[in-house]
Length: 413
Image 1 (cartoon, helix red, strand yellow):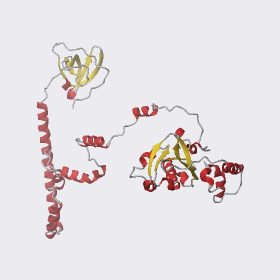
Image 2 (image 1 turned 90 degrees about the vertical axis):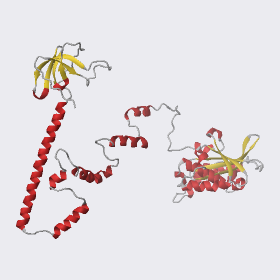
Image 3 (image 1 turned 180 degrees about the vertical axis):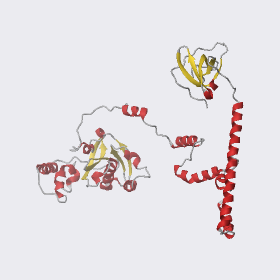
């Protein structure tokens, strides 16, 4: 049957039970499946062929398809608007080929068909029908896998067009995809739900993927602040020494000198200057113990004087800052029983620019040291506020306000 297999449709599928017996280490057991396959081939060999002779003035049509273990193709032409086969070709895939993905399997059957029908298709136009739409643009890709590129180059010598067809429109070769698969579950066909409910719910509680340009803008906004850091965390440790060096060598107004000089009693020098001074210090060093100890005592006394002077400068700077701060604050004296108004801009109770920012009046029930005042209200609990947020009430019309049960308010900064 080797010669007549070209006239028998699905020859590889029919003969598969018997071809398994030729595999390595396979026991030769002629099962009932082999008997049925043998009898079917006998019947096929005795039937009249339905093939037609090729018409070289018409384009050839090639129908290809693949299954999990076999590939098949049918070469034919149109007669009276009906497809008539000229040649059948099929084979069982090897173990490696059976592990290909669907795209590679569909490409494999096309390459196999052109190699098989090379004498028919080499100088003629042809149309390839396949039910895998990926093959339409696979021939134009430049970055495919190596095996796919070799197959594409092999097909460059042929003139053909790929047409994607549904399985129902490809009855000559689509039977391979309808073969029974013992590992596949048979389920009732159901309508596809395209509402994507899980994806819709995930939008509510999953983080959105931030694009690269947007991430850079966010990092710049965060890192450019007063407490920001560098964009690259790996460089923080490298820049820490430089930052500390700049801080320690900068002049500080409150102490009247640099922190480096306050610790080491001398100005900070660059490494080159330090090496130069260290060299001359070694040349003129005095190794007498008494002289060296006296010199060290003098240095310690000078350092103590420098630190005392820095402490006095710090006190002077604080007093100056306090006078500047106190000059901008009105000194208000509150006594128990006074009527006062409360500045409530942070409460966000009244809306609009024309509304008053003062509420009350409230009655002072107790005055604490350092400006804390306890207020009482007719319809609410007592509460404590800072005296800077109060002013005396002189009988003007102010909106009534009941403050909720709060112990303290946030201090003004």
